[in-house]
Every structure is written in C-alpha cells, then in structure tokens.
Length: 592
Ligand code: ATP
Ligand code: MG
Image (cartoon, rainbow, N blue to C red; front, side, top):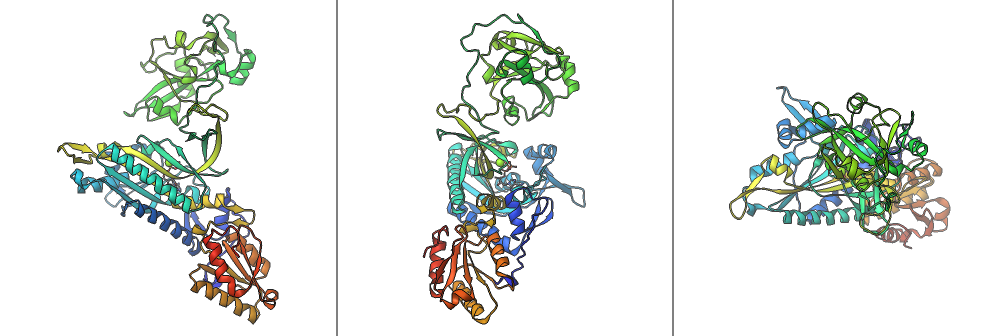
C-alpha cells in the first residue's frame, strides 16, 4: 500500500480528551476516529489491526472446537425480563434500549446470554445433542458511566463472546478449561504479557470466573498478587490471610469501663490519636441499604476494623443482597440517633419495624478491648468485645469476609505477601452454571429421561480493548511499537529523496517485498525525511527500510526494527531475506 493512496492521516497534537497513551497513539497514528463519546470508527489502517485480532481469535476459537454463530444485537425486552436482567441493567443504566413503531421495547445487546439461550432451548431436546460451544465476534453496546480511554472503554465495541452448553458441571469444567487454554494462546500470539486472576462475576452472574489481565500502570483494575506466586485476584474479589490481631493474648476488659469523649472527631485516624490507641482497635460501623432479590431495601450494619476498608463489590454477595448503597444521613440519624463518626453496633433501632442485621468482618471476629461509636455525638465506648457485646445482641449477626485487600497483607494461600498492580481486563471467562438455563427454562432430557437445566459457561474477549492494551504495553516516547501479529503492516519502505534513482530503488524494494508476501507499506509521500521518520516511528511499523541517495551510491539501504531503532546497512538484494527473517523472529532485533 502506498501512503499517498492510503487514507492514513497522522496528527501532531494530542486530542484534549485522550488521557491514556493508547488513546493518544490510536488517534495520532490515524487508527481510529471519534464519532462521539465512546464511539469510534476504525480507519482502513486501524481496521487492519482489528482484522488481525479477529483472525487470531477466530482461529483459536475454531481450534478449540467452538462453533461460530451470529446472534442479533437488537433483542426483545421480554427475553431480558425472563432472565431477570432487564431491571438490573436498567437500574445500573448500562443498557441501551429503544422502542419500535408499535412501542415494543428492545435492548441493544451488552452481551448475548439471552439470545443464545433462546436459540438453544428451541433447538435442543436431548443430552445426545450436547455438548457444544457457540461463539460470535460482534458489536456490543453498553452505556458506560465513563466512556473514556478510547478503545479501552467504548460504548459500542467489538467483543468475542462464546457460550458453552453441557449436561452437567463436569462438562462445563472441561469447556471452561478449554477456553482458558484458548485465551492463553490468543494473548500469547498477540505478544502480550498477561496474568490470569480470580474475579467477581458481576452482573453476568454464576459461580467461578477468571479475568485475563494485561498488566499496565494505566489499567483501571487493581490486581492483587502474592509474591509466593500462588495467588492472583482482582481486588474486587481478593481475600487476605489472617491479619495480625493487636488484642491477641489480652484479657478482655469490662465493657464501657473507660468510655471516652471524642468531641467533633469523626475520622478514624483522629479518634485513634485522641483515644491513644491504633485504628485497628476502632470498630467502624457503616449503615447500608441492601437491596435484596425481591427488590426491597433493608438496613445492614457493617462492622469493619478501623485500619481496613469495606470492599463494596464483595459486600452484596457476602450479605446476600443484589446491591448495596450507604444509607443517607437522614436514615442514619433515625436508627442511630447520631451522625457518621459516632455510629456503633450497640442499641441500633429497628428501621420500618425490621431490626437491623449486623455483619462483622472476619478480621474482627475475635476482637476484644476495642472502641466503637456510642451512637451519641462525641462519645466512644471502651472495652468492646465482639463475641461478648455485639454478637450476643438479639439482632441477626454474622461474620463475613468483606475487607479490601491491602499491599503488604498476608496472602490467603498461607505463604507470601500481597502486592497490588494495575491491569487492563481483556478477557473474562465465567462458569454460569444454571443461572440462565433455569430462569429461561433451557432444559433437555438426560440419560434417565429427566428434564435438567443445562450447565452453561460464557467467555468474553474485547478485541478493540486488546489492541489498545497492546499499545499500552508496547510503546515508547515516539510512538507505537507493534507486536508483529497486530501491526497494520509489518514493514515500511521509505524513499528519502525524489530523484529518479532513489524512487526506482524504493519502488523495486516495495514490489519485491510485496511479491515475497510481506505486508508492506510504502512511504512515497513528497515529505522531508524528518517528517517521514517521525510518522513512521509514531505508526510503529515493526521493520523499516529506508532508501536514500547517499546509501544507494554506496550500494546499501538502511534497515531497522522499530523496537531497536538502530539502522544497519544492507545491500538491496538482501533486503527481502533480512526483513522476512526479522519478522519471523518477532522483529525485536534485526536478523542480518
Ligand atoms: P469492565 O469491568 O472493564 O467494565 P466487564 O467486566 O463489564 O468489563 P465483561 O462483561 O466481562 O466486561 O466483557 C467481556 C470483555 O469485553 C471484557 O473482558 C473486555 O475485554 C470487553 N469489554 C467490556 N466492556 C468494554 C468496553 N466498554 N469497551 C471495550 N471493551 C469492553
Ligand atoms: Mg468482567
């Protein structure tokens, strides 16, 4: 492809809304064009990367025995009501939805569990037709709260989504393992460094799930790894091992023996200092509104050690709620009689006639000689013992695991210390189990003629996001350093002058490379060498061939890899061979 005919336009300046490097480089290298917030066109150049990504994904899905399908994006509301996801997604505000001329409502698919389950339940009647795994590579729509970071978080984006169907859990486990392997091969082939971590299943639901994460400082996800190498989890899901307990070995003091004023001091740090203790000995009591499966909100008092934070992703699941939100100050005042900072777990009033349930973080279970708010402005109780004073109250009380893991905490696996890194989620695999097959009655007759709901898995992978993540991981201060498999073109030929000999030599190399099957781009523009070099570095062709008058006079051209940016002089008749060998070896260094 000749640059002069390629529709490729590079930009000098960084667009104002581009906060992360991949976003800036995707724009500047002319790969995408923004139509609206979170909505992007791929240029002919950018689309080549997307197509390569698509092919890699398709090859690995096919190799893993998955079958490609094409499910509608426009989906009737009724299906979403059947699965129970309509309200949930509407509440989250993530669902794009619209009405037809008859006022019937539709969703624009954010994923396709409903559509695929509907197809399967209408076509499959017997266990003999199982197992299978159906996949598609199609556009998804999500009205993201913050559609930023370019292709990393779009509102319209390309996803590979696969759905496996089995008669039992054993079959599902096998499919899940296969997809895990396929994902590892896909991200390996893309030249990405990645980690697989335990994940929260979120609104998709199901039991186990793992995320494929590209480790990058700009990632939106926080990941927790044990330095013993045996534990990795998204912080949304991460657990810690047993934390040191400052009260260990102490005799429990009587409750309220030394109650102390804490006038106007609402922060844990401030209180600890004032009470001459440590935050770990202060019990923070947070009042949440927890919305259950029946849509009703109940109040929950959640107790956490003052040196820890509540993980609001783990919390709903741990206390059996669909979602949670902090209670308003007005509600707080009604049930505690005080304001944030002085709330405690003892003597909470019922709310709308329901006693408030207590949920105590595991780290406090054996706590003694603690401080807690007295439900009175400016007062703290002393000598609180969780088992003796809190668990013994008539209200429902249970111990849960809801703390956010911290850098330096012990690993839950026993050995090692936890460290936090940032990552970009490029893939997510789930064991759905029977969540959708039960609600949507996707059942078949098993060997004993008994109707059973199918065991399902689902497996998502963002193609545009993976390309952006590849750029986050592979760039330098002058531009993109494409991994060869995702590069729009593998090689560029540039002529430095317009004189006939240079042009003829460059033309010839371009044609030879093309004939040899190299994906080659030809910078034939009438531009100064400096401009060409800048653009070529920005766009990030893995291999560069430069033809200039001076070199030609000595019978050489300059060949370099983008990664090294160190030119070697090569005789023109050896260029094809050197370029091919370099590309085959991943184009890190020149294979002369
Ligand atoms: P996130 O937590 O980042 O919002 P998610 O957990 O909602 O993502 P899934 O529902 O698991 O994402 O979707 C499967 C895959 O689709 C993700 O792993 C990611 O690669 C991709 N993806 C999800 N949302 C977006 C988006 N807004 N833009 C681009 N890709 C996306
Ligand atoms: Mg996810």
